[in-house]
Length: 113
Image (tube, rainbow, N blue to C red; front, side, top):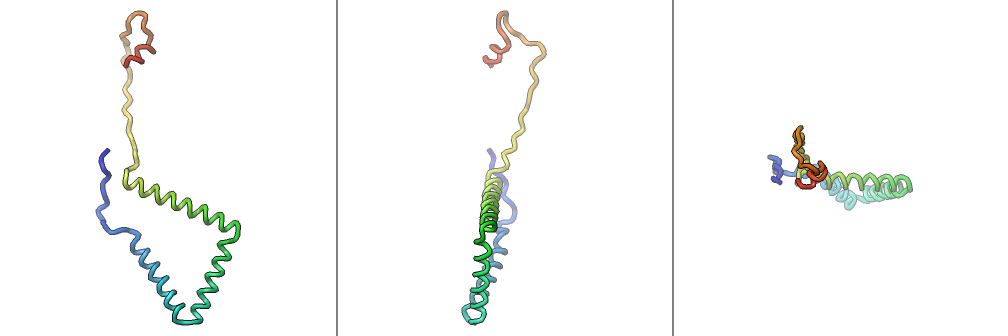
């Protein structure tokens, strides 16, 4: 099977989002380290988020959604690497006149092929 063609862009598409998210987290962390009020607000916010996401329905739903996203991400990476596996099957029609020997059924002729 031939290798799939690579995209012309070599830079990862997710790198900009990752760096932006890390920048925001770093800025909030520095603000919480420097200022006591910011530290208290961040701690209170994280406590509220933990309390919200640990409730039974939200925890189960968010875990299922996160698992589905992981499966779709892995499948998308596999499809990019291996291709979609689309196969076209050529169907040939049998001859209209079959040449069978006397006493030979068409099932026996098919097993010979």
